[in-house]
Amino acid sequence: MKFAKKLIFFELRRHYILGVINLITGLGLLNFFQYFIFQNINISLRTDLSITMSYIVGVTISYFLTSKFVFQINFLDGTFFMYIKFMISNLLNYVVSILVWFVIEIYITNYSQSFFNIVNFGIAFMVFPLKFLIYKFLIFNKK
Image (tube, rainbow, N blue to C red; front, top):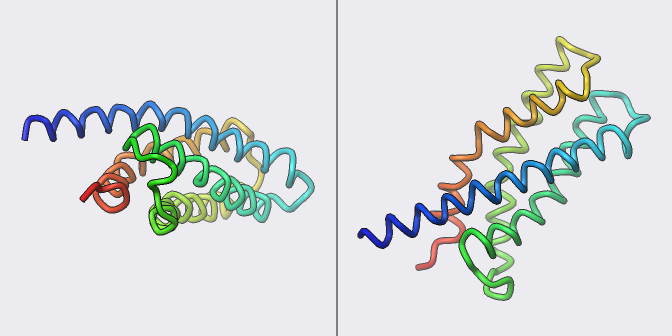
């Protein structure tokens, strides 16, 4: 039992370290899509498109990094079904982001890049611990 607790601690620690990397990557992707790729599109549609594209790219990168560095599963040992479960579990972050920005854009139609980043950081921070539990017990469990 002591070994299991120690293993979970190390996985959680690696998850937080990788989470910082994923957060920086995710915010970079969001800003890239929001302020460069979709810059000439209506702001509310642009935000939805930016969240969607950064979700697809970011979650794919995150799946490979999480499986390898947090749960130490070789790329070839992971299955397509694990990837699909990972994508579905990350819908939590996607749906929360879309809903939060839907509400914000009802009241604020013009916001700064700093505000955009702070809100997205807050969303990621709120769902982060729950995502670890989902990853640990529903996706990367080694039974």
